[in-house]
Image (cartoon, rainbow, N blue to C red):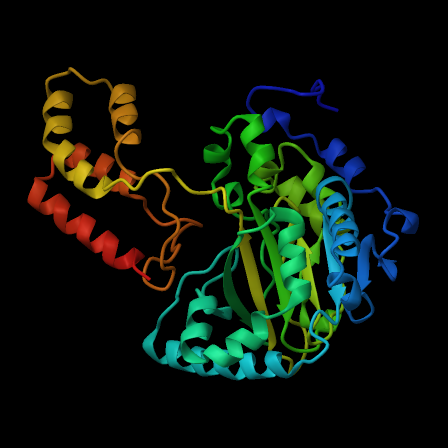
Length: 393
């Protein structure tokens, strides 16, 4: 076991990853009395009957009690909750599925949305920003779909009010292969090397900034490949590095669980939970899931800053200072970090897909490259304009 004192401050490195510790953490069992609102515990996943719990969501005190239980599970326990009959009326699910299929056909024809996260491109159908596309195409259907108190209660249980909803549809056809085990956005979309640059407390905070959800748009028996989950794995401190490790991935495949879902069920989990879409081994089930990626209201800067204008203005000075030896590489990186946008999100993943990785190039990446190549301001401005076009909704 790695000896890390309580309240460890510092940085995780590869040496921080201890497979035995990971195995111990993920070999726990969730007792039923720890989740009194659940109708059952299946494979360490608490299952909630939302048809029975619907009246509780309309009562402030009972809703808070249920949400507190969900938050405890997501943070300190199994890390995942299953909501049976999140949609007691599956009519809005079917209506949305029809819209999504239309979009899939159109985007296949236009070759849109080629990139994917943690899976080979072309192995499935992915609709980036299904939230906006659904809303603009069928506003009434969208209102019926997201006018769902169970979905809202789950998002608020983890993130509080004023959360920001985003969504991406994933349809895995028969024969579609499984994803690699991973954690999710934010640090889950970084390489191990990049994640290691963030201090330990940032690893802890990132999991509180988003909530991952999945709404089943069809019946999903295990052979169709519902999401593979490893309960308690969100408790593992260096997990944003460890999911890149082959030994940890092998243990995930040995110990993970899958729950069959019915149309209208939903699953929510801590973004630090190790998980992966399963392989569709069925003969004829096109497994469609609307993946909900909900963000905290707090993930925003205080001021609006035109960083593209700053980057263009800085480029000649950075090139000149570097060539004169007045800026070292570390000083150059510091100047770029203070001016250009170093984070590539949010973006339009249809036009700015994560090809060759999990994140596209950022504005800061382009500025660093422009300095290295000694680009003119005019040439760099063309690149900035192209980036803005790719990122535009």
